[in-house]
Image (cartoon, rainbow, N blue to C red; front, side):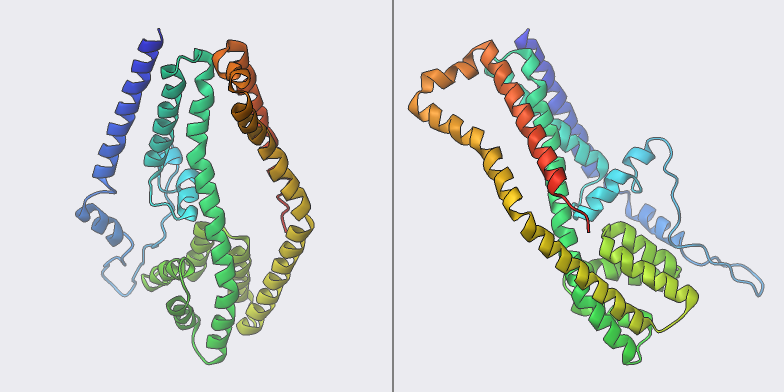
Length: 317
């Protein structure tokens, strides 16, 4: 029975791997198809004095499978915000294959079948945790670069540059990843996209609350009017105040975060010490069925406690 289940999981792993390789080789389409999609945003050639322009940023339908796997799906947006160059299908395949590979380990070691979902869940959720961590790091870099970019944008506007020229000035002198995002927005504007649509797409791609504040201020200023340089200065001041509050909250919750780290690592530390002192005593947790059940339950409660502690300490500003 165990051999058949292991063979089945191995076959599924090979199948998912082959499907992922085929999807990667297929790419995003041929060069002619990509050029055709780019030409869809070009202005139409119509006779007469009227010239109609198609929107460059076209709203794509998210129905059916494209709603889950398409380029406009929440999963694709999460990967884009993390800076991961994987399509949603490839990302899900990586998670499934890793879960299946880890699920084979207890079967090969002779563990009961009911323990298989535990390593599968760990392998399936681990890439998501890594992507979320990468997304947080990228957002932190973007928000730190925004504090450098806003004074440069304000100085360019006060020097007499237009908004697009000042934005290009900032994009050339700021580092990654903000420079790449601003470069994409500038290209969309140069191709004929509406400024409000391009800025909204920028805010959606990055997913930063600070950038959303800047974009909202820019859109309101374009519709209402006013001194853009002074408005950006006020936005910068607000962002620096939020940064100061985040620092204060991090300092006030430092003791609680350290307590969570110590309490979370204490079971693993004690298990390692007992394994070194008396291996036969701790070994029953791995060899006996009751010990394996207790070990799986303890690991599940440990992960649940870490999740709730992270949620409690995650204070929005």
